[in-house]
Length: 351
Ligand SMILES: [Zn+2]
Image (cartoon, rainbow, N blue to C red):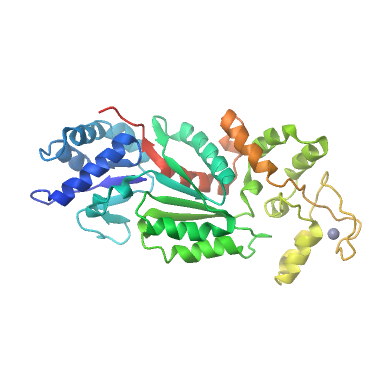
């Protein structure tokens, strides 16, 4: 997280304020949080005799790097750290005193529904980092939500003094504009109860699940070890309308008639025609189940269990060129950007 110090107007710093500034400097030196500030603040702190020489050196270094680093982070979300917060309600800010508790200066926590999601999200984030933020690093600690218990874990973390939290959950939507599943719904509801809102961000994947927005080049690499049939089906999915491919279930399979049934149950006759007319080739046909609404023509997505994401995580770990950002859909880019911005930190420094 970018913690942007704007500290002016106090004749002399109190013991509490000095302690908070020391904690912030240590966080920057360790590469945990991106602690920087206005040029004037950085210069003043680099000359403040009551600070340790380590802290002074850190602020001097940040001031020297201001021109270069300032450009990299110019348009990114930041949290203003001031003596008195909040000032302008449109600018997210926090009081310096908060950081007297060094726990708030720890690494950012990426809370995902499981550790495979975490690995995929961080793998993709590293690719974006390498492209847009050379010389910086990701400082992320894994937090495992355990699927449906993710909201509980989020509340627990938000109530425990600790680093910022970026939480990514699947929407579990069954069609475009469909209702959120219970995990996403509860997570968003519980976010409102969280006391430390300033350090908590929740991002819901617009499409059904993370699998649905894996870029096709990564998906192709993942399918290498699968059976020929599954490989062909995954490749075929790239050609199917996003209306279906972004909302089908790749863990258990999702047939066309199930989608039609879900639309009918949620009273979305406006979308039924789309679902009836999905153009597909190469996806496995479903033997009529007895209640099928498209008898003879029904098809389903491949059912891969947890296979696809686990393979994606492995691919990303071993090779960062398995996917090109130009193939990412807008929502994937939005999510990964959010993770990178909250996890962004300078490299650990020897001071
Ligand atoms: Zn069917």
